[in-house]
Every structure is written in structure tokens, then in C-alpha cells.
Amino acid sequence: MEITNLESIPGKSITRHLGLVQGSTVRSKHVGKDIFAGLKNIVGGELKAYTELLNESRAEATERMLAQARAVGANAVVNVRFATSNIAAGAAEVMAYGTAVVVQ
Amino acid sequence: MELIIQFGVIAFLLLLGLVFGRAAEARHFRELKQKELILRQVLVFSEKHPPADQEFRGAKLVVGSVVIAEDYFKRIAASLKSLVGGRLTAYESLMDRGRREAIVRMKQAAREAGASMIFNVRIETARLSESDSNRQALFAAEFIAYGTALVPANRP
Image 1 (cartoon, each protein chain N blue to C red):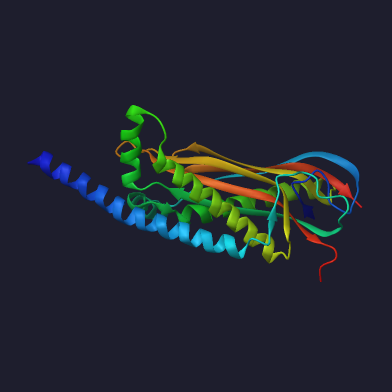
Image 2: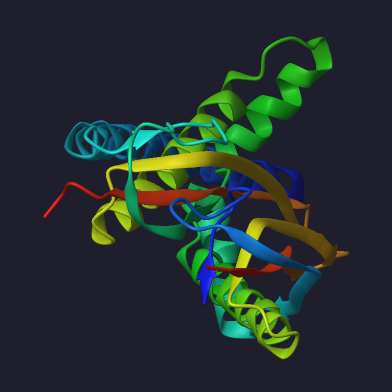
């Protein structure tokens, strides 16, 4: 399975379009990580626990998108976009979407 | 008396934020400069279409992300500055750090994949906030940079 955010895959041609596929996940930090971030808020800088959390979320969202793509018989997903939104205090949704295609 | 203690706590937090926040920011900018120098061979384009006269072996989606939070001093400085309006330099440097770090991480991912170019780069910012009833909202933002890393066909 190939993923790009270009409109095609260089060196290959798209033979079939199978429509939009998407995957998303909503996650929040556990209490321990939250306290750490609270202390960190005084001195600022990178919140590694959050970076990690959102990276895991993105991997999961991408995996779900790929599962959908496989289910419709695609062998690649093109024009992939990511979106993050803060839906509640301490919880974020990460979403990945793209066009499922068959390439040769 | 209570007022003095409260004021003392705020002053202490301000000082902590000023000293450690400043030091951390200066260190981060130094690190960024170094990493950018090392990664300057990886070319980054927001262009959608790779050059037609060059052949590529593989395409891989690469992502770099970072979550950065303000320090206590920045928060107070920015809220005071917004009374009169204008540039909030405290936040400008924060955004700059976040975005450059995200790009650096994306480039690192591309280099690990053996790629020398990244096309169709998109940069996004998402605000992550945490509002509690007893705490002020924390300003933290996630910066993501992503694009398609391409490996030239003529490379070993």
C-alpha cells in the first residue's frame, strides 16, 4: 500500500478511482501525563507527552484509513490530508483522509 | 498578608518562566540552526508536481510534528501587550520554533527513507487548549508538516 499527498504516484499511473477513504481517532492523555504538562506550562517548551500522543493518534488514523482502502480493493491512497481538532478539554481528534486508487 | 503571598507566587512563577523559558528558547533556536544546517540537502517544495524530466523510485508520506507550549512569562507578557495591541513577539517566536521544528522532523523522516526531496508540503497548526474551572487555559499548539518524500531513480 502506497500513500502520498500528491495527486498521483510518480512513475505509476492510476487505473481506477475508488473514492474517499478516511480514518480518525479521538484521544486524551492520562492523568499522569497531564500533570507533567501542567508543570511544563510554567517553563514552556515542547510537551513531549502530547507530541507522542498525537503521533500515535496519527498512526492509528492512517491505519484505519488504509484498512478502508484495502476493503474497497485499492493498492494506494493519494492526496492524503491530515487534520487535528481540539474537541473537548484535553481531547483531540486526529483525522486522515485521501482518495483510494488502483495504480499500475 | 494573603495578597502579598499571592503576589509573591505570581512574581516567582514569572521569574521561573523568564529565566528557564528564555534559556530553553535560546537553546532550541541553537539546536534548530544546527539541525537545519545538517538537513539542508533535503529540498522542500510546496509544489504539487515533481519535475517531469526526473525519474523517481519511490514515494513516501513523511510527517513531522511537535507540540509546543508557552511559558508563564510569555503568557503574562502577551496578555499585557494585547491591552495596547500590536505585535505579540512572545508568541511570534513560539510559532517560529514550532514550525521550524516540525519541518526539521519531517526532513529527518525523509532522509531516513533515503529521499532528497519533499513535494507538496503542507504545514498546519492546531490549537490544543486545556481549560479547567480552576486553571487558566493553557496555550499549546501542535505544528504538523507533511509532504511526499521522493527518492531519485539514479541514486544508489
